[in-house]
Length: 202
Image 1: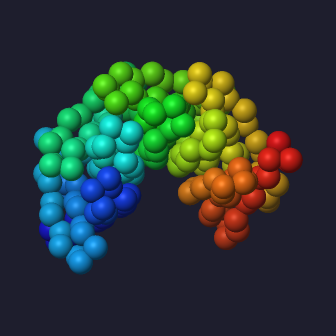
Image 2: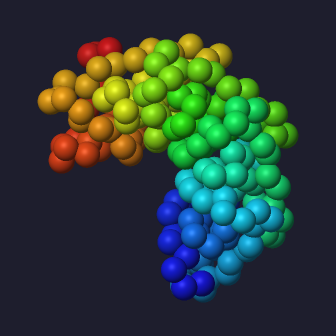
């Protein structure tokens, strides 16, 4: 699809890569030899954003402008689960250590948890204006970037939040992040740097 604006991408349980098409309201699948299949979504103007593999063998993705979380099976069957908070703006999503899907709501300042049955729980962050953007799993908690306030935060499966200031100049604007096997958290900063948070520093 021309001008589809591919956005998030994740490895699927079927050995293919799955991606979202921000401008086309589609999810795509590409095999290792480059064969592409596209699956239309049952909504328009939804801005499908980040995508991840779930513990149920399906792919889960955020629908940023539709205020919902989408699920697509490897056969292409799509289901949408609405979020309780209006205009929450979901962006990042990941599979959590508890088997549920976890997401961040950039417009609502919340973290969400979705079971594979579609039950949604939302946890407000201490600063609702922090604009959480990315989320990644650790061994026993989730880590998020608070883009608007320049912090990293850890969220436990029961919703307890612990925030960490970044040792950077004003407005470091953390975006993507990942957790290394030793538990060290790395975040990409818009100021042109990488932040590192080690276990012994928190």
